Structure formats: structure tokens, C-alpha cells
Amino acid sequence: MDHHDLGGSPNTTPISQAQHPLMPWELRVDALLLCLSDPARPGGALMTVDELRRGIESLPADAYATWGYYSRWLHSMLSILAEKGVIDRDAIERRARELADAHEREHA
Image 1 (cartoon, rainbow, N blue to C red):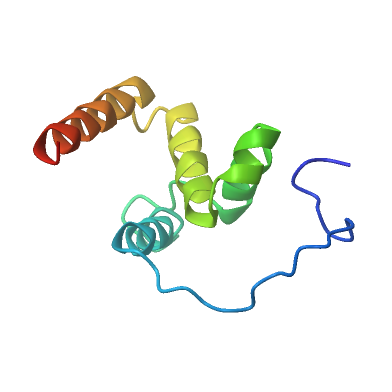
Image 2: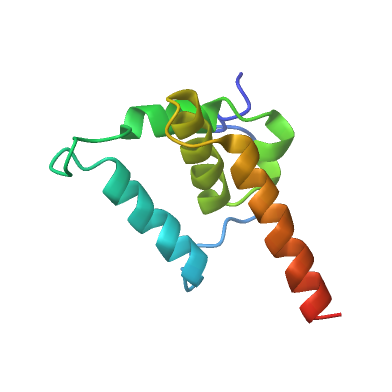
């Protein structure tokens, strides 16, 4: 069984049916996917939902098990766009580190 195919797996932990309020970054990830996959956007869709799923299913088992829903989406979107040469993954990761460092300094 693949790590992403969990349906029917035994589990004694109850699954919460409660909806949690989405964080602002989660709303942005959702909006970004809508924009990137919209065939009506100028130049056409940059990615498909099928590609998003492929990217999610390509995650290592530990990442798939511990990351949240929108974290998986974001990682997949970055991977697909980097594959297509739309973004520079290294530049994105550098900028993310810079922002994390600035946040640490600001809140230390």
C-alpha cells in the first residue's frame, strides 16, 4: 500500500469531523491553485489538478503523514511549477529562509 492510500487502514483514533477555520496562508494557497489551474487565465492553465495530485502522491511518507492538507498542496504546486521552469525552486527556498530568519529576529 502506498503511503497516500490510507483508505480502509485500521485506526483506533477517532477522526474529527469539525471544520477548523482556515488560516490566511491556507486561503492564499487555495486561491493560488484556482489561478494556476484556470484554463481561462491569459496563457492558459499553468498546471492541472491531476498534476497537483501527482505532486502530493510523490511526497515522502513522513512528509505526507505529518504535513497538513495545504502544506501538501503548496509543496506540490512549487514542485510542479519548478519542473515546468515557471519558478526557481532554490530562489523560493532562499526567500522563505530569509523571511523565517526575519520573523525569528522580530519575535525573539
